[in-house]
Length: 295
Length: 227
Image (tube, rainbow over the protein chains, first blue to last red):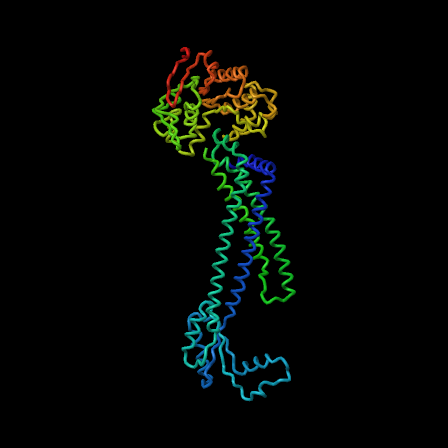
């Protein structure tokens, strides 16, 4: 039945669109604005997540080895660290290497660190990364209890705060997106209700003649899909253009926060936004049209 | 029996008692007038028949099916067996005569082939041949109501319900529409017509049911003189 009538539904939808061009324009604009704001929120969330992931994965536990420890014992310590649950990678940094790194930090070649300090005062160390950044604190605590460990450094205090902040940001951004989506549905429902209100006599008549509910709904569905998709396309075009120019400008400025620039991910987001537009259109239509079907 | 009302009462949510213990039987092929002043319950009776309203009490059967107990999704099927003519015609202004008639077929899922055959047939039957491509605002009131009649019978309903079909028409045009309804009745379609135009009812020998304050006060068989 639906397939047989597709031509009719399409014709009705097109007719209604051209007849109520002002309302259609209003709906498209509403969807465009909603999707645009939604898109900005999504992009901001993605970037914040990306930034936070990077911050978290940069977290490192530096394990300083007791200076009294022999080389064999130090090798044993590495095995012990690796056995701890949650430990990802372990990299050995010898005291000589540590000295070289320190020397590099003093840019001018003329200055010789070893000459000034004399005997290398630095201990051997291990740079440990947790397989899950959230486990850093627990892993660090376990390592500090191993024999031969003089000190463990993982940014105590700062790490805990960082996790609190990133957790908060994630929850707030999810809530924001959900709220925006809900707001969009109701805005669209209101605009489409106006379009349907203009045709309530026709709906009433159809129902009295014996039209099934779905038969009345379909043209409005198609209208909703078309309006929703159009609005979303406008929003995504603006969004894509804006974001790309932002990417270009920030790259040259060598900003310390780098934006997400994975084209496949961005395309997926844009695609999802267009689909959301269509879905919002259908949802808004369903909410509105049902009120007029009760004849 | 095609239509049966058993002790039907209807009280609207605002407390208005529109029908009070009404029992009524209408046979296949009958032509019946529903008379009475406005507010007597004629419109409520019609709304109950097409399941636009639920009865508060009592039972209604149309073609042996209980209308009161009908599920929502069965309602379209009921209405496809009932053609309705309205006082204000209710034509779609942006559709031509032929499109208005075809619309009723389209709505119930008729095929294009059926529509191409049936629509001109019905338009000729109501005497509008040659006006197929006119829009409602290019027609006189009587012609518009003819479109309304064509649309009501295009799906070959068992019952034709006319709610004050001549209420907006002058007396000569009213008579023309009445002749059309008698013609349709002669082909076997049951016709229920609500009206308060006594002069239309008086001169024809048809059954007349009179309502007052939600009750049936008289039910005169065809040929009995009106009080």
